[in-house]
Amino acid sequence: MRRSAEDSVPSQVLSKRDALGLRVVSSAVVLTAVVATVTWAPAVVGVAAAVVAATTCMELGALLSRGRRSAGRVATVVAALVVLSATFGAVVLAWTLLAGVGVMALAVQGPAWSRVRTVLPVVWVGLPLGLAVVLSDSESGRLLLVLGLLLLCVFESAAYVCGQRWGRRRIAPRISPGKTVEGTAAGVLATVAAAGFPWLVDVVDASTAASSALVVCVFGFVGDLAGSAVKRAASVKDSGSLVPGHGGMLDYVDGFLFVAPMVFVLHLLPPTLGGSP
Image (cartoon, rainbow, N blue to C red; front, side):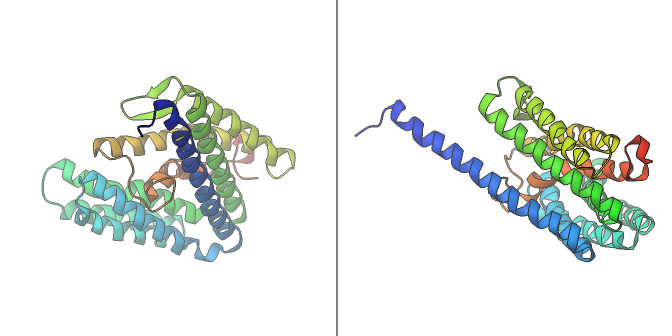
């Protein structure tokens, strides 16, 4: 017997709920593991971040090279080494990054775009995750890093859920049709509200909470949009299928790759300007 359009609506709604539930559960599991590692096992953060960098760099390299995964293997190894070097400090990280990018750029044959496409994953992925490793080496850095991670999760979750439910006006329909004005506004409001909690319980001061919320809202959104642009150019929806409910590793960390460098900058600023307390 042929089903009517009305009969098919509940199954579609249930499917969306299942997808949302899977996304929430996977986010909660991964975020809990990351926060626990940063807080209680900082010694292994470098190794964990290197694994994430290698996985993300492989996905990004494949997208930039239109599916030829072999093109991203060298960048994957270099990005992992860059992140591991961050365990010895920011200076070693900087020199390793410059050396890796320089050698790769000189070794690549072809037009300028080929060189950029080869080294871009190392800078895009290796530098932010390396800076996150540097942050995890101090108590104040870990505090800012965990705060940024939690606020980013709030921003992305609220934007996604509210955008799916109430989103009408698209921000960048050609790049990311799912991003809406209503969803993004909800993400900003939720992030600002969440940033007020650590201030109320006297974990951070008002300037740190406000600057962290600003960094997450602006650069989390830009990072997500940049990841979507790369996927759109490669004509794929997700960068992979490693993280249930999200897609690939790049789909999960694209916002953080833009947030992490700015959190590092906050860490360098005095407390009066939103830096570490």
